Image 1 (cartoon, rainbow, N blue to C red):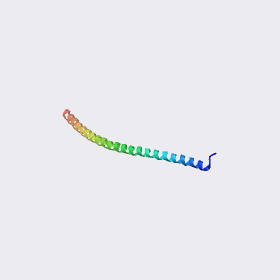
Image 2 (spheres, one colour):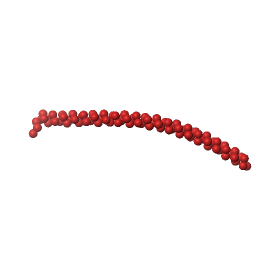
Image 3 (cartoon, one colour):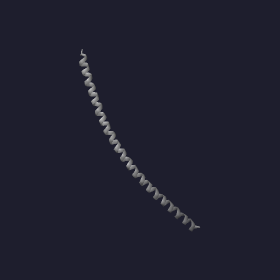
Image 4 (cartoon, one colour):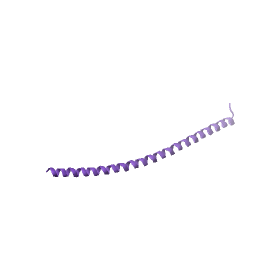
Length: 80
């Protein structure tokens, strides 16, 4: 049967190994989180660009709709 000192020594080694594993996993997770943060920032920038583009398209579509309505109104006037 191991002595109390041997058991304590074994426990200290296991605890040290567990702490080291936790530290390594924490480091890995922090790296992943930082990378995801960068990805999210890039996605948000891209989304802003897409929103600006869609606003431009909507403005053009509104302009074309207005023009088409004017044309239709004139055609109706000329038909009557």
